[in-house]
Length: 134
Image (cartoon, rainbow, N blue to C red):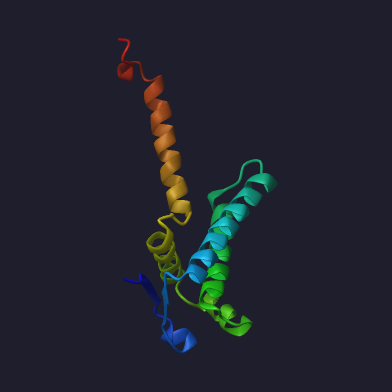
């Protein structure tokens, strides 16, 4: 049975878009995820101490571009995506990525959570009360 994801866009684009897990869409998603990670790497390469806002800008720009490609939108309709709720766009794209490929779309929230986990782990290593040697 085909997996599908729907973007409710009737207010902005005049219709809702439902996509399925076709090979064409999976290829677009794979290319899109690569593009998002490439943008993240560019932020790292350009900034010695990048801010989460730098990553957020790169990710949000790329997600909007990738949604437009996934839906096959023309330039005019692609521009209209910027007027839609980013939460709706990100949820649509992330659901397509996860349902169709099992991958996870990068986000600043996930990056922050991962950083907190790493910092907690480092803190526990330095805490003598947490050491198994005592």
